[in-house]
Figure (tube, rainbow, N blue to C red):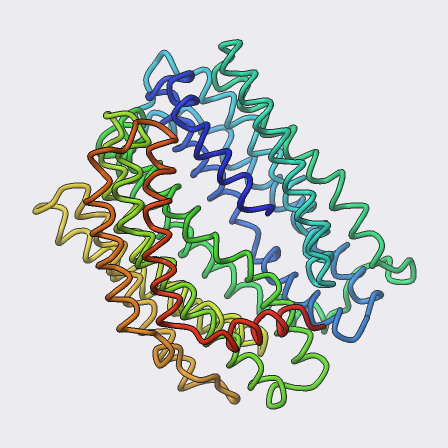
Length: 482
C-alpha cells in the first residue's frame, strides 16, 4: 500500500502538475531531481551496505554493534555531504548552463539545488534509521512513514501549483517530506539501539565494512547513471526544458518496475536473517523457492506492463510528451532483465560478494554507452534509450556468469525459472488489448487507468499459465515467516 497509493495519486496528478508548472519548468525539475539524487548516491556505499550489516546483526539480535555502526555511519555521511556541498554548490551556475536551463527558470533552478543538496545529509542519516527498522522486518512502520511523507509532499505540491510558487514551492515540499519521514522512522529505529553501543566501530569492523562498501558505492553510481543516462543525455543534447519526455518516460518505467520491489525488503531481510541464523547452505533452498516465484512474477509484470505503458502513457501525458510512451515501454523491457537478477544479487551481497554486482553494472555501463553511440545516429534519442535496454540484457548475462563462478553456495540459475510460453502469450494479449482500446482512451489520468484496466485480463492469463496455486501460497507463507 505504501508504494501503490502514492503511485496511483502521482499518476492521477502528474498531467495537472505539468499543466500547472508548465512543461518546461516541470522538465527542469525532473532533470535537477536526477542530478540531486546522483549527488545523494555519493555516500561511499554506506547506506546500502548498512542495511546488509543491520540485517545480519538483527539475525543475532546484536543491538550494541548495530548502534556503533549507525553512529559511525551517521558521522561519515554528514562529513561526505559537507564535502559534496563544498564541491558542488560553488559551481551550480556552470552546471545549470551545461544543461541549457533557460534564463527565466535559472533562479528557481539554482534555489532548488542550494536547498536540496545540503538537505541530503539529513535524508541519508534518516535512511540509516529506516534500515534498522527494515532489518527487524517492521515493514508496517516504514509503510506508514512513506505514506505520511508522500501526503506532505503532495499537499505542498498542490499548494505550490495553485499559488504559482514554481520550483520555490517544490523545494519547500521536498524538505517537508523528508522531515515528515524522519518523524516516524527515527523514533522507530531508536527502539533497536542500545546505549552500551554508543561509540564508533572497531578497526576490524571498519575494515570489513569499508571493503564491502566501496564496491557497493561503485555499483550504486554506475547503476544510477545507467538508469538516468537517457534524461541527462536529453538535457544536454536537447535542453533541460526539452528533456521532459525522456525524464517522465524514465520515471514512469522506474515506478512501474519498482512496484514488484515491495517484496524486496522482506526478501533481503529474510535472506540476511536466515544466513545469519543457520548459514548459507541451510538457507539456500528457501531462497531458491523465493527466486523462482520472483522471476515468474516480474516476468509477467513486465511483458504485460510494457505494452500497456506504451498505450497508456501516450493517452496520459500532453502531446508534447508523446515520446514518453515508447521510452517507458523500452525501459520496462530492459528493467525486466535487471529485476530477474535481484534475488541472486541479494544472495551474493548477503554472502559478502559485492564485487559481483559492481562488475555487472560496470560492464553494463560500457555496453550501454557503446550501444547508444551506435544507435543514436540511426534512431536519435530513442536509440540512446534502446542502448539502455540492451545494456540491461548484458547485465543479466554478466550476473549469471559471475554468480556461477564465484559464489561458494549458489542458487539455482534464475533463467531456468522464466515461463517463456506464458510470457509470449501474455505479451501478445497485452498488445492486442492495447490496440483494441487505444482509440477509445480518454486523455489524462483516465486514459492511463483505462490502459491499465485493459491489461488485467492478459495479466491474469499469464499468472494462470505460469503459477500453480500451491506456489503462491508457499511464497506468501515464506515471506511472512521470521
